[in-house]
Image (cartoon, rainbow, N blue to C red; front, side, top):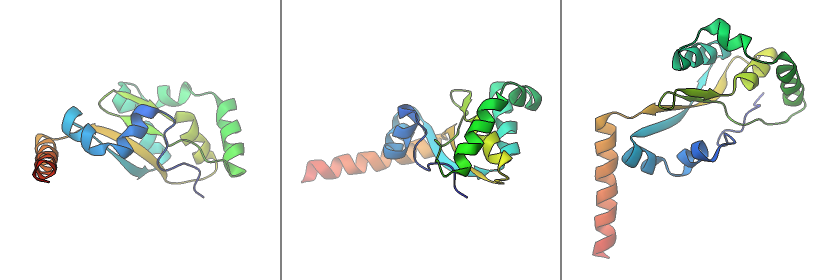
Length: 138
């Protein structure tokens, strides 16, 4: 059962990473990709990013929201894609991921945002320069 929208986080900054991935890589040194992971992996990584613990990450969720989301998911509502942002040291999606877990969904898609390597940034910049140069030749 797919309960998440695969290219919509509900936040324009992250959604722009889908349509302008080369810009984010070249100009900001950020790469983003959708990765499937278990709810436990999501919470473990969220705790790591935020300098928290697994216990704290689950304790700060509202069970009423989780139950409501699970009910909507079961009825077919598609929710925004969860986010783990290592660059901004934040996450968005704990309640949605717990609702998916409640429905026994073993793997959830997550937009993972990380700092790109120098090699990846250089490669993107060279690609951009080739494209820019070819446009001048026309």
